[in-house]
Image (cartoon, rainbow, N blue to C red; front, side):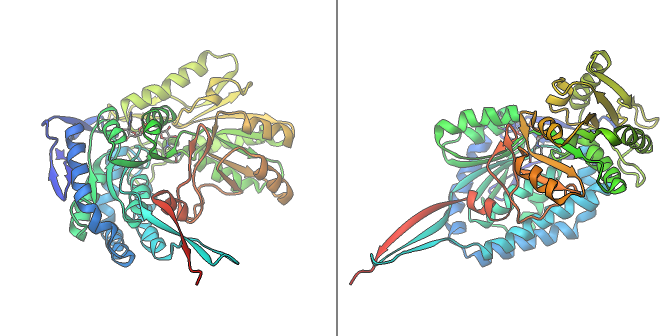
Length: 483
Ligand code: NAD
């Protein structure tokens, strides 16, 4: 049994109320540890620690903070296999994925912002003829809250914490209660790296308890949140009347627009990944697949043939493509959409969607990847976020109809376009309602680029200097140097 503790003021502690929550391994369905069920008191203690640490941390040099973040990055890399195993066990994702993507990216997040803060600059405006100069200070906000989801646990947790710390803030962070393990390992590494006490505090527990306490605490001045749209709405309802700075990275239902003139083989193999990587539990997965009419039947046959070859199994095995879904609650939700597809006249299940019982792990949360053909885009299977290994396919006649289908959604996180026509890719990129567009590629990320969504996929941008701008307050100073 692994006991996870809070990291507050540089010390490891259980919740003050002594309560805990079971931590379940989705690959086996067994409880394998506990996490603190913290509450307002623990958040209050974390805020006090952050308050005490803020003056020294915010006045430290960029160089000092940069070196510390680089040390954390290196320690993550040195412990990559332990981190990857922990992530896979907590989340159900294939170990090879955690080893190749999640943990290296967490180390990159620290390295990237350690370097970015040394290059971050602010504006100055010379008012000619008036002998004044305006310059903008970029000061840390103070105490900030970082709240993250379960699908890419350490990857997204560090994507928030690293820029917040680099900019000189003190942080109260809460990982998902469903996948808390790598955040705990990170707290141990921060201690080893010599991060001053109170600069980063990690409080574990439920969203409606710890998360809510962070969001409503008057001394927490900004909230960076990634998670579901409904949670984002609740957070905004609490934080907006308190005039907190807010960054909300929310749900998605991303379209793939596939044209007949695309590089077919590259499109096919990438579309398999964009559909089912991490069991379809990536906010950037393309779950609505629209295919130009002339290649629709061919795509349908080839795609299903490839999906049939995907192997579902225990995440620790190298040859497994899909591991376990994250929880019993989540697989039940995903299966409810499959049940709906069985009864809805507009939907036909072409392949998969069955619960899989592995001989050695009969209580694990496994299912076969599912492909559904839809007749009508207004069907809830194409309008609601399922967030599992389920994609819906539909044909379109021409560019105009394809674009209309892609934009017919309350979400707007990302879109992938497959075409060899450069003019078309530009036309569509301009008109797609999404924060991120990929043309002939998917999940290709440069950490300097702005990341975020439109419509109900969120407010604000993360990434590069956008994140450093979010985690700093601009203050303009006007200096009169007239003789
Ligand atoms: P969730 O909204 O249930 O939880 C996210 C985090 O918020 C967790 O740490 C949770 O404990 C906390 N939380 C819950 N209620 C809270 C409250 N009232 N106040 C404060 N915190 C609260 O989301 P999830 O199920 O963990 O993650 C899946 C969702 O995240 C999907 O909708 C997915 O699309 C989205 N997501 C978005 C992005 C993006 O970049 N846009 C990235 C990854 C995941």
